[in-house]
Image (cartoon, rainbow, N blue to C red; front, side, top):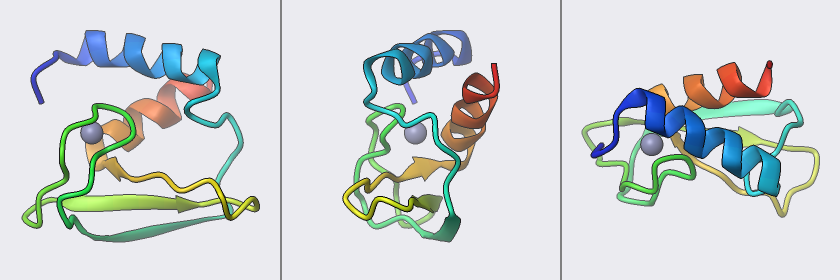
Length: 80
Ligand SMILES: [Zn+2]
């Protein structure tokens, strides 16, 4: 990740405000190895050596994936 945590928290807030990241609580959370897809928070690829978190929403068109740290930021900012 290129940005520090404070900047990323601001990015998460912007995405929540814009609706790019949902405020709703996921029905399920899938956890697995990354496959090089981009994280929906920091927009950096999630490498196969990293853990990827994929929330599952009631609306199946919402597909997101996160790094562990980015997931925590999303949870943190969404709770505020
Ligand atoms: Zn990320």
